Image: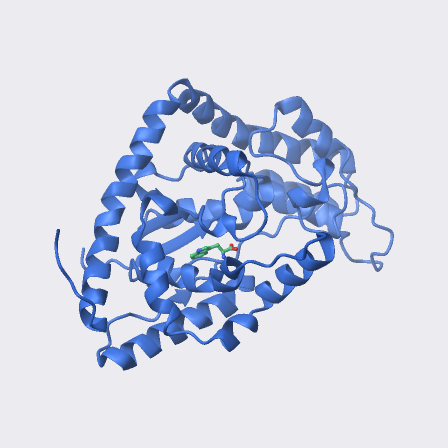
Amino acid sequence: MSEQKTVLSAIQPTGTIHLGNYFGAVQNWVSLQEQFKCYYGVVDYHAMTMPYNVKKLRENTWELILNLVSVGVKPKNLFIQSLIPEHTELCWIFNNFCSIGRLTNMTQYKDKSEKSSSESKDDFISAGLLDYPVLQTADILIYKADYVPVGKDQDQHLELSRSIAKRFNNQVGKEYFVMPEGLHTETPKIASTADPLRKMSKSAGEKHWISCFADEARLRKQIKSAVTDTGDTPAGEMSPGIANLFLMMKAAGAIEQHDQIMDTYKDGKLKYSELKEATADALVAMTSTFKERKAELSINKRALKDEIKTSSAEIRKKAQETLREVKDLVGLVNVKF
Ligand code: TRP
């Protein structure tokens, strides 16, 4: 068992999850659980780095936990970041192994700080936003994760994590931290059904995302009204809207149906209504399992909260062990109270 590699990933508490989140990341989290020691965090401290709503933050954190467990993430692998204060303590130590220049250079920081100064009147950019990748580094290294399943947009943050780990190892004269690697599994990138040229996202508005827990009528309606012709597809190529429907059908597990309908498409005989109906059927079958689990779990939300508190406490032990060793290595006083 000591050979088993460790996986860590994390997600900000946005409450609901849509099919884009599920197929693009969470479905992969679920399957990695079979093979690796997995730690999955709901990172509420990260969510405070941009303007946010105090009451919503806590609600969204628990709602996301409920949703993640409903789609198959095991509660024992889940933790809430703020329940494990060692993350922020390690972040402080790591701040001294990271230059300000590296942080101001991060693409995500530049994008978000530009966005926030153009959108709000007081152009407030928090120090937390700048420091965000150092906290992310602490999330990863505190569990000595080998693999970090994330999208390519996080590569720069991972590069920074490795550079912090190297500087730390140099300073203490020991190969203490392993270098974490991104795990870029091919995951389906789902587009908005209302505008297949943009990715599925909540920020674009109601019609641009489909919840993993949508009621059947709404889901069918959204698929039925999916845009199939974006007007600018070169002859002989599949339009993005059609490709998106095929992608979802396959990702939802309806492989045979998918292949059969794909053959019809290749023969030039496909009716879009047939494709839409089959896609909706596949998604309804998948989401009804999610909804059943969610309904069961919702009967006793208290029990789920308790379970997550217990798993966080259990996971915290690993974080405490790392932090104890780190404090020793960097020359801090290490007293057990
Ligand atoms: N920055 C990540 C995102 O925006 C979220 C995150 C925080 C994360 N800590 C992490 C991802 C640790 C992987 C590992 O998606």
